Length: 430
Ligand SMILES: Nc1ncnc2c1ncn2[C@@H]1O[C@H](COP(=O)(O)OP(=O)(O)OP(=O)(O)O)[C@@H](O)[C@H]1O
Ligand SMILES: [Mg+2]
Figure 1 (cartoon, protein in one colour):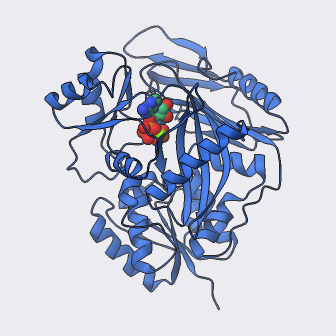
Figure 2: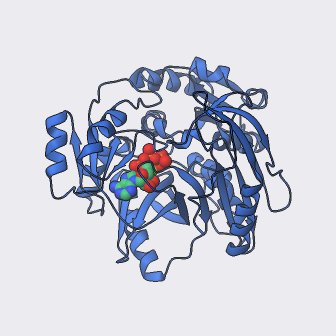
Figure 3: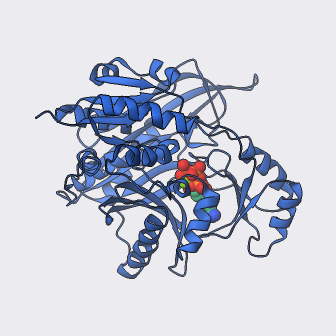
């Protein structure tokens, strides 16, 4: 009997690529649902691995479900996955439509829309920052005057990702511009309609994410990841490291909140990435949850540090087969993101590490001669590399040393003096 087909919603990017390779290596026919424009950007390796594609418009979700479901039925698809934050809700509806393992379609919206998420968390008793949805300047003023919000506060888009349009606001002066910035962020497949932005209480503490896999409603937490972000108004990721060993009482508190968050948004078959802040008092606040594997090479970190084949595990869950989630290694891994010191034109790059022992992954995204940004969203990263090894201190030290060797030359805009600087290391935690 032939194996069921596997369908990915959006197959671009390293995580989706790894899933496609894993599924094809196991002998599945792999299909992609994609927009016409995105398919143009798929590389030859990816196109060669795909058995077929269905071109659709993800912004028209009802029609997209119908079109993809018709294609999937015709091609014998038995598993639907996505690693794309913007498509997790569509994936839940499609799984339900096809009768394959997936998340609760009735709750999937709450994993995408942060206003609905805040409500779902509150209803399930998940500790989360006090959140107000504002739709106009009067609403913004009222939210800023609400003592449950206070300063600093965070202004963010309702359904953004990659930290785009997220601003930590220290006083009333910057709030209107931050709200405009949040409102201007259009989601990847935005169909319009939501004009509001969120004003949220600021949770102080140390930021982690928890990578989990839920199968038949039972959740396994694969790792706690230390999330390294910049300080200041724009919180952009500079790296991730795992596994973090939290003190048992804090770990228990974190897992309690994360488990409740997973239930609140109806994740019952698949990965989740939950971002939390642990305060000085040891209490855990959930910032947000994604019904998908983490981005930012966290899957690669899990694979190398813990020896868990996350791609195989994701496939097994999607196919309704028991997933192998026990660690087979006890190492440590970290990723560093390379950012530009300023906005301008990237004129040279040197010192990028190469893949070799202890460096399993290197990715460079920015084109030489192309425009680069001062990072204010995660999408402005120029590249990244992963370092792995047996102990945390050695791995972090090596990653910092490798990052310092990278030299990028950016001609700033407009007509300012050229700058040569090591890639930004200032925000990387010791
Ligand atoms: N309420 C909050 N309190 C403290 N910090 C916050 C809060 N909300 C957001 N942040 C900071 O801003 C970052 C980005 O916010 P958030 O995760 O909500 O946006 P996002 O667009 O979903 O980002 P990403 O896709 O990178 O996770 C967080 O990782 C955190 O550092
Ligand atoms: Mg986030």
